[in-house]
Image 1 (spheres, one colour):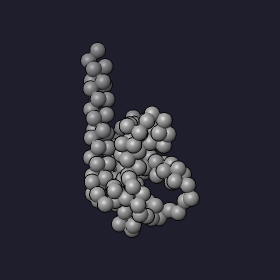
Image 2 (cartoon, rainbow, N blue to C red; image 1 turned 90 degrees about the vertical axis):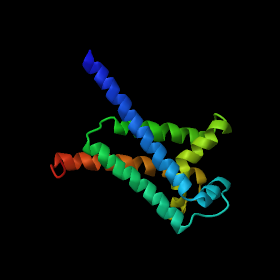
Image 3 (cartoon, rainbow, N blue to C red; image 1 turned 120 degrees about the vertical axis):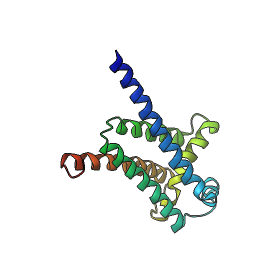
Image 4 (cartoon, helix red, strand yellow; image 1 turned 45 degrees about the horizontal axis):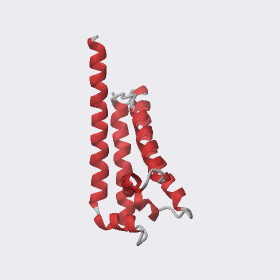
Amino acid sequence: MKTDEADEDGKYKFLAINILFVLTVTISAILLDTDRLSAFIMQTSSPTLKDGMEAVAFLVAWLLYGVVMGSNDKKDFIKFISLYWGIGGSISLTMLIGNFIAIPVFTFILAPTYGLGFFMNVGSSYFYDVMCIILSWSAGAIGYLLALLLNKLHIVE
């Protein structure tokens, strides 16, 4: 019985740590440059090299976090990031549930990667948004899988 409670406590701690990471990294990325946030919301200008570098830093943070989760063999990490980016991305891309929820989620999910537009020239805004979500998910997943591979090869222990 105690092992079930310990497992449940461990899952809650894992979830809390992941949510804390998401909030810290995303809010930091959004607040790092309020001009970029304004440009993202109003779509008044194209992303600059600085915006692109900030977006890359956001993806690198996810990559490194994935490495940490993989090194610690946190098997639920892929499930967490899949749910986070899947649900958040779906809400932000559909706008079916109304602007009250969709616009803040859209901003939270896509504003940190706004600068990637400096490196990509895609015709469709929708396609660009999907690519940013996929790149964000991929950064965490690749980091996680890289750490698992290094652990299996006994390079990192």
